[in-house]
Amino acid sequence: MTERSAVQASAPLPTPPLELAEPYRRALVVANPIAGRGLGETVGRDVAAGLSKLGIATELYLTRARGDARARLRGQREPVDLVVSVGGDGSLREVLDGLMDPATPIAMVPLGTANVLALDLGLERNVDRALEIIAGRRLQRLDVARVNGHLSFLVTGVGFDGAVVREVERARTGPISKWSYSRAIVRALRGYRAPRLKVELDGEELDGRFGLVLIANIIHYGGSLKLSRHRRLDDGRFEAYLFPSADPRHLIALALRGFVSELPGGSCTMHPCSRAKVVSDDGPVPYQVDGDFRGETPVEFEVLRRQHRILIP
Image (tube, rainbow, N blue to C red; front, side, top):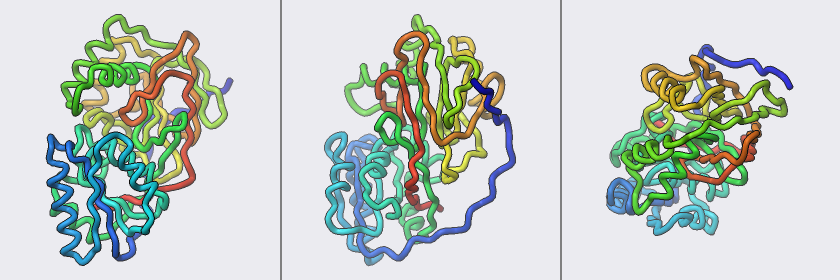
């Protein structure tokens, strides 16, 4: 086994050259009608109307169930120059997973519970502002990864947060709120025993065992806990955050650090990587991908070569 050097702090990476989208001719607006406490359909129609006023031929598609957005984009016959995702992080992930050409610009109107990527990019829940951003055509490239066959663009968590998301989905009867997560945290803490996770990054097995592993490409984890602000969305790597101890006392201390300042810090270390493998020494451990419970260890993670284009202010 080898000891991989950890990153505690680093200078910001250089800003890449500005990339602009080509002028749009055809657009597809994909809206989750129940997002934003039922505002998704109205907002989707407003966005479609605004794009039409800009002279862009626009189609509005309203999803009805999980997987609809992905299936709609996989079945797209006529090419489009723009896709607008109206909804939360789950809606955006389906758009990313279904879009056949990753160079197609994607705009967002964030209406979900956390809207993690929108927070990172400074996007607002405002139709007029979204239309201004679309008209500006300014692009940010976005890395995505595969985790046991599932697409990830936010964060994969192995350990306690996987247990929390599992509890959220067990109790789910409708749209998820922040209270859903609060109650799930309380249930997950009851009798929780931290696992012993073995971690391999870019083909190197790390010394020691870990109680919690996060592999992220974001800053605002869960919408409030802050990870490293020095991450880059388009450098071909995610950041692996490793927690040697993850009993409830240590989890609370690390969460407070993430709320007040940022991680890594304390016992948490950060290791940029493009591939990862996480297995458990003592039985299956739950994991989540971008807020969805996906099963139990082992977990295999790999950044894909394709990069998507997100419209930004």
